[in-house]
Image (cartoon, rainbow, N blue to C red; front, side, top):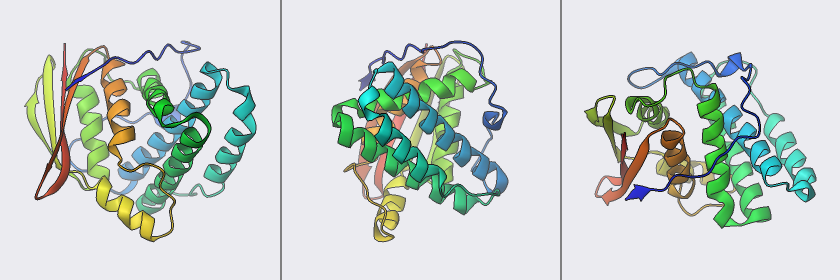
Length: 226
């Protein structure tokens, strides 16, 4: 399925000093401090993207709700670099932001917020544009955070294909639900597809994807190309 480009014109294209986001792609499954840093980076990208989403949409009437959501997010930010603590913090923050967007703007606007998050990623990421492996390596690293089964099908700068055979986000969602986390979306793909699409297109590439499901569970195949 061809993923349409999303209009994510930024409000301010000046360089942003966010050294906390300086994460280079790593190979394999990230763990320990590296994983904690990636969880932290993802949380900051999503929170910054939410602010851009509100400002870009001139949704001043929702500022109180935005501040309440941010207050809830940052009330439980870990102090150190524990991987599990940052994983819990990110997932809780993601659930809060999804609920805020869907409640105040509707499910149809979720893709716009997801695209804004990816525009933040593109603005602060140090890796080059127009290299098909770059956004898919980031996706592979994110999949690794959940211990998903991800492997390269093609890995060239002009065209790269990543297959996620079993997406363990589905498993973690159910675990979180049992722990009392309120989930707004029926499936993680409702957020992940537009977010990954924008992550690829913001690097100046074309994005295609296929959602899969078999006896091993839910998965997907993503292609980035010139």
